[in-house]
Image (cartoon, rainbow, N blue to C red):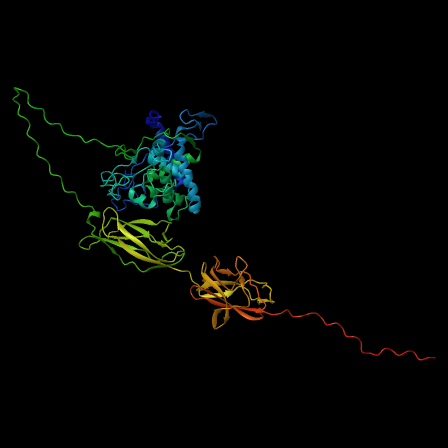
Amino acid sequence: MTAHFGRRLRKGAATTAVAAAAVAALSASQAPAATGGHRTLPAGRSALDGSDGTTGSSATGDSPYYTDLPPLSSPNPSTSASQSPSIGTPVSVGEAEAGIPATVLDAYKKAEAELATSKPGCNLPWQLLAAIGKVESGQARGGQVDANGTTTSKILGPALDGNGFALIRDTDNGKYDGNSEYDQAVGPMQFIPSTWAWAGRDGNGDGVKDPNNVYDAALAAGHYLCRNNWNLSTDAGLRSAILSYNNSTDYLNTVLSWLEYYRKGTHSVPDGTGTLPSGRSDDGSGANPSPSTSTPATSTPSPSPSKPGDTTSPSPSTPATPTPTPTPTPTDTVAKLADAGTAKLTATAGDAFTKKISTRAQDSAGKGVAKVRIRFTIVGTTDATFAGGEKVAQAVTNASGVAVAPALQAGETTGDFTVRATLLGRTITALDYTASVTPRVADTLARTSTTALTCTPGGEFADQVEVKATYGGAVADKVAATATLIKAADDATENDKGPYFKDADGKTVRTLTGLATDADGLLKLPKLYADDTTGTFLLRITTTGGATLTVELTVAAATDTSSPSPSASADPSPSASPSA
């Protein structure tokens, strides 16, 4: 199996040329105007180097990737099957590039299923994860994973030290990539540590978010692609999502070509037997994505001692060249984070916050520092998120040193929570912002019917009480409400006689709590019953926000509406006929 894996696929020049033409045609149909919607790349460049301040804005830090293109023939597997002697399960025989290692394929499909439930509007196809997995790591180096889906050795990209790549200084103290100086892309989906910190997911349910595990990485990639409410069934949404993973037009075209190829058909192959691509966007420089290895240090041999009789003088030693002091990066010069005029952060439950968080990175002189990355993290007990459903977001400071976080979206949990701003690449004091979510409110309640509510003693009311809540004339949905049968208009004490509700056990209840209007602002109360007391009674409904409505209920004995029987005739009986 090892020998099989070691054989890398080599395509001829003619095949590559034809495939490149196919990608150009595919890109035109699959993602029109691919170069639109993102920055135009310099001539001869296939990826950004971060010099414009966008380092870290992609999942991979715009690390190198495999550029091999799929074959032009159909990937549909043949109808015959062979038996794998090493695994012992039937494997369909088909185009080699269409075979996806079993565990890797399972991870992609499980991620698709989870996203179909959690973010159905995204319409994520597993084939897109497979296309990105192919381009990023050759499907985890041909499926070199263990039974739990973890790669048998780490897959690391090159150090993002600015030498031919983006400059991204260490953000994880080497936790994931083993590098405490610069970040490196990690795992089968090639996440940089700063992105994994907020995008990481536990895809295999072991309680750990591991970028080296294909289940975790595939699910994280799915959520990353589905943020910002992108709909991947549209050209615009698909293009935006792929470019956010690696901001390169060439990368977009390569992923789209594999997506189209996999959509035509794939088949499972045993783990460890998948083909591995060979062409790379950095023309072979760097180490991405290959097994992580240690490079032994090399020493300079000492000059050989002079032989007896050798009159040649030894070469004078070369003076040591002093190590130049490295030029500080923008991140190195940041002394503190300061608020940049953020307004009060308040929103009603379920609504978007109208104000955004602005944070300024400053040097020791108080001057703004441009092109540094700020991470914004939501902490505290809340279901609020940033736009797109994430709890963590990143932004790059502008020329004034200000980074603006994405808009916040309130959930249904009310109360205060914290958004923490931290500098990526160095440890300095974080900056906390307080945000508040207030309850949904209504200012008006009105019955939806004018029918009088009446009942006979010991009976039940024929009509249920239904009201509609509004706020400022608009529907007030999901507003909390209570309903109480009160003693009088000026006495809101619960009545102990007259109409009542029933609880789940059939017991008498005269106060209902935990009520809420529906999406249309409507609230329909349960059926009302009457005891033997007659008279006029009051039902009071109140909501958060102060809306109040008092409804009149009447309990009266039934009125006899039958017609009276005719009385006997008062006329005297006719007298007998006179006798003749």
